[in-house]
Length: 478
Image 1: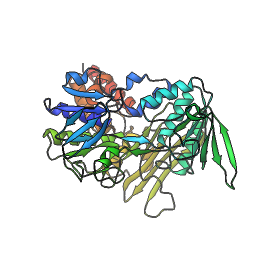
Image 2 (image 1 turned 180 degrees about the horizontal axis):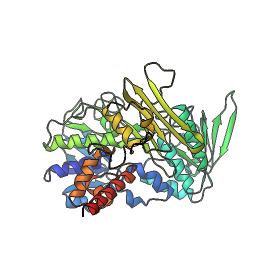
Image 3 (image 1 turned 90 degrees about the vertical axis):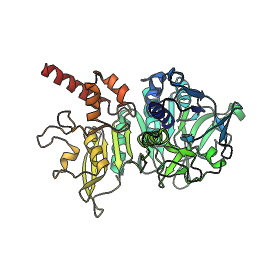
Image 4 (image 1 turned 45 degrees about the vertical axis):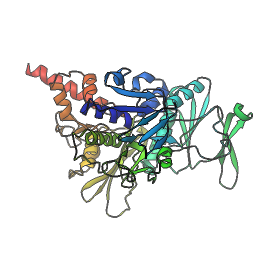
């Protein structure tokens, strides 16, 4: 996703510079955020493509999809590819992303047995879908963001699904324990079972060699016992690791990922840049799409020369989950509780309805928030968090816009033009208005021109609401 965005941004600024793209996957770049919808069968694979089939040729880009780079020769400034070709470069941009982590455990010594898969790529999604057609029970190992998305997709196909998570509550990086419990209850209503503090000790298989097939998941119980969960399908969602093997073999400095400066240059070699999940900037590795796309835009401006002063100085991490039946937004430092000094916590919980809201405040600024089940305040909280803006004196207005009788801050009438509507692509209400005034009169056309709604998709309703409101204003004026 980072590489596709960079190429598009660069070509829009410089139509002539030679660009060669290598991609290990045969498919055109696609939106990984929406893979759970593909798995659930509610979105077709071709609907999540980020690049039209004819785009590369029509824009003079040499796209070698399905051709993997196997070696970087920094001295010769060339890359060696799996098809035997050697391609020289002036600037090399690494956007290799991450790979799924497969934990070492019994049952996985000789690779993944039939019926056990990771959930990372469109090919993974297709293989899981094929196996799901004949399966009845599925186990998802890992209750982080990707694990929850995979579980929802499988449940949408009619499977009996259980999520096993080692930590004490689901999505512990984004949620506090109370929100984790609400999420577990929401999943239960969708037919998904969850078990936390579940120590998976191995997979049970039948057969030998390449004919091995998974039959169950083994849990280590407190006190030394064992429990076997029978299953037809296992999805391993145990986290990801930055894909830096090429960079490491080429001698580039690696922390958790390729270490880069504010111009996204490798600190080892300024002719090599890195963006997205394979880059480490100021000790931070970003695992979300918005920072990756921001890096792509900065780098395109630098390399095209249209914005030589552009710098990437860091990004706020805002997590959005919008699988069918689950709405979640999480940002910043969410782990603080009522007993922690120096912070103010505003919280609302309605477990029966699957709603949990929390705002964490320090020195009058929002430093963290969780919205689960009802996310109408997400736009307001995102803006306050992202800009460290002063907060309203009535704190409940943070969680319930308009509670005091005023119009909701998120409504088109009340939103200032500077308000961010699409966090993934940093599109403001003012940009949407300008696009509409320039002739884009449908949400789809505005989306194509501004890219609003093409990331996680959670702002789609807001985008359609603003366009509808603008249409109403025009009819009133007439």
